[in-house]
Length: 86
Image (cartoon, rainbow, N blue to C red):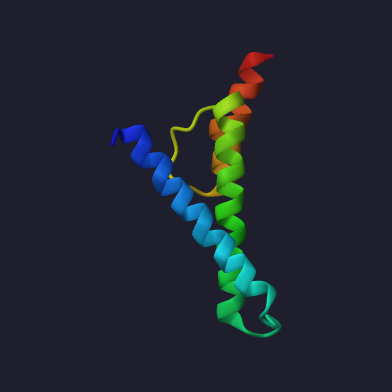
């Protein structure tokens, strides 16, 4: 398996687990359940990272780790590249 194939497999696995988590969260009353809120936020973050990876691939760069603050991803790896293209 090539490095690109391994990365694609890992990303696909993360997407599948995130979708499973989202489906579970639909059936929970999150209300005051702090753990469920954290899980919902984690699922939202994974979806946001996946969306940013796609946009950065086309308009920026993907030279960032998944644990980078999302505002830094937008500013340093997307916005700067968009601004440079103008």
